[in-house]
Length: 348
Image (cartoon, rainbow, N blue to C red):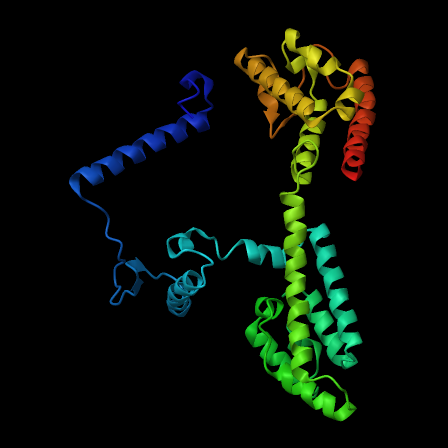
């Protein structure tokens, strides 16, 4: 912070933060120079378990299993020419895939439920027992928040299967690691109902359908994050750009310098119909104008928080004045127009 602002330009909290950083830096340099560090072991610790020199502070079982899994996984992916062993640690194994599966974003949830509908249709086409189909459908739609055993009674023919599914966990099931009991149950069903297809064929199809659910989530995610429009922006970036414009449209002109107030006199219809580049340029100019107002100490300029100005009393054309209310009504309609224009561009 103090690299870019003078002490006079910083708030008390920013000054205190800089002073704390300086003290921490001095302490670290002293420790390195004198080879003197705090003891990492706590009083009364008779036994310390560590993995690769790192002390385990949580579950021993989880830490040791993870360490073993990383060694085996590193060797496996390297042997299969999938990931070189020196790049294995560069992959974030725990986060993205789990988020894709469990994310409750409305659009992603709609894709997930549609995929479950496809699975249900496939189960019906394979003449799967209706009770098992309903059990699988309700369990998957629970997205890991419910146990399969809670969906059937202890006397149900599928209770043992449900307990095994719960033991494996939702993520394993969705990634196609299903219990062998599915095979046994399907074999019994084939004999009882005189079905033609082999149980192995049904299990392979079930695994494929489960994997397709995750695959469609990834496809949707890549289309949302990476697919670029004609302006070179992804849908998420375009939405963020529009929201930024909406925030800045409510700026009180009195919080800008006189020479910058022309930025709020542009034709907002043109801004809505214009390119993303023109909107980005306008946003940059508005942010520069806000910075200039703060530097000049203009009243109300410091209320610029989180990307938009909050209302502050000012002597000229402020909120509550007739001119400000008229402009807000006029601008509100233009905000809706900009949003409509963006959505129209996306559809095209």
